[in-house]
Amino acid sequence: MKPIKLLPWIISIASAWSIGYAYNVYHGGIVGWLRKTYYNKAAIAASLESAPKRLIIVGGSGAHYTVNSEYLEEQLGFPVVNLALDGKLGLDVIFPTVLEHIRSGDIVLVIPEYLMLMDKDGLGEISVHFSLAINNPSLVDLPPKKFFEDTWILGITGLKSLVKSGVDLATLGEFNEYYSDPLTSRGDPTKTWQRSGDWWKLPIRRPISEHSIKRITEFKENVEGKGAHLVLSLPVIYGSNDEKTINNIVKTGAQLEKIAPLIYNPETLNVWRDSNLFADTHYHLQPEGRIKRSQEIITQLTPILEEIEQ
Image (spheres, rainbow, N blue to C red):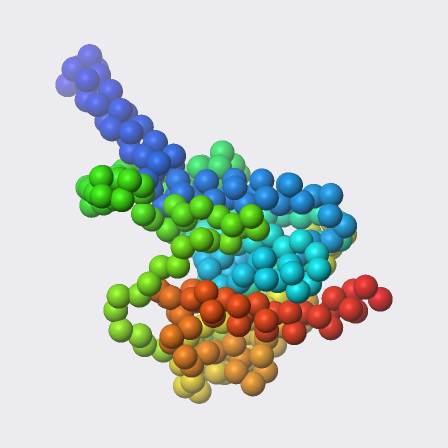
């Protein structure tokens, strides 16, 4: 086929891909909403840069949807910023993304989800998509072929997604997706998603991976290089109490404690048994659960803050 006959096809494919990319990155796709959420959280952090000390929450949605930053700030007496994003980004993208917003004197509290801790390469299913969306593709180190494949997928929009966005806009007057809701003045979500299916207790199949140990250790060095302090926390989950799960949590905690101060409830290992405190996933909490979680953080964090002051 002559090149001139291929031109209309090339133009059509390029146009369709560009429309899909614009939708996914700037409008109705989860990457687009996550991008906006990140920029909004970054602006909140920037507005509090003059504070001599801040508590910076870092993690995935299991941190974003589990704390009440305004309550933490009221009790601690200094600013709190919820910079948590989404676990599907992976530690290798989350850490460098938030690092530029950390300042001297900050207390950086990392609350990683177990899927992130168990991951063997530090990347998630939307790592490439997010790095492109915030114009920082250097965040992800992938073979060129894999990077191209993920980039190509970012320009493909499913019919189901388009229809849902259209229905939401027509019936609700707004889009209704994860991260599409406004944030509080401290970066917390203003919407609580609810679960429609039955609950089951989450098992933890493996302990923390060697890659995650290395990556968190590097992040600690980066944080301390900025004159800030790193604190780690086990995530709160609606989880199983089987022997394998408990052993893997204990092993994970033992490794994390070697890197930085670790906060958790030693009696429960942050495995909660009341499903009524959880929202739509085993990590996301109802508003009353967020207050309870924040109260535990204050109790566990206070001795570490006193030690830092000394």
